[in-house]
Length: 213
Image (spheres, one colour):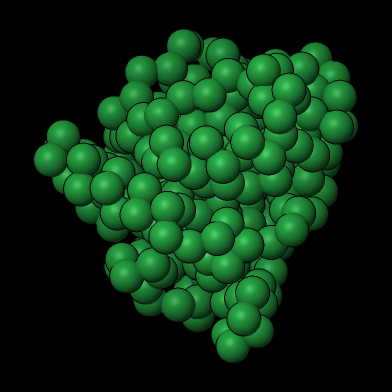
């Protein structure tokens, strides 16, 4: 993604988190229970090295720490969103590595993570070059045998979110995009009800494992 586009998106998301309460945005859930279920299916453990990409102000980081994981990284384009999480967590936030950046251009350490999580960043990538950049980052940053949980709007989900267009994909389409180095373990459909209860949104989740050789 170009620096100009990245800067525009950062301004967009900062405005969203500055102007709305974290529990009023359409994608809000008190806890990402399905994400935790899939991470545990992927053998999440105390010694896991976990990264949540595009975390926003999600409470998943709280739950992963409570589960016992101590190597935790959170990435988001919006510093406003991360500040909300830091404020909510208080002293616990000191246990987390916080990174403000665009995941399509961010340089992460090779083989650093055993577990990668992304709920609803990937579906905002509608340009093929951005998709390729994201995939290369995942391939580089996840260790052999590591697990990836990605969630986004399903094929019958909304066409837009927060005023931006999205790419709706099936589990098979997600699997195919990552098939060069990852194998699909399982997939789950979630019908997410927005906080105002005015809409039901279809999300598809996939659990992938990086090939060991």
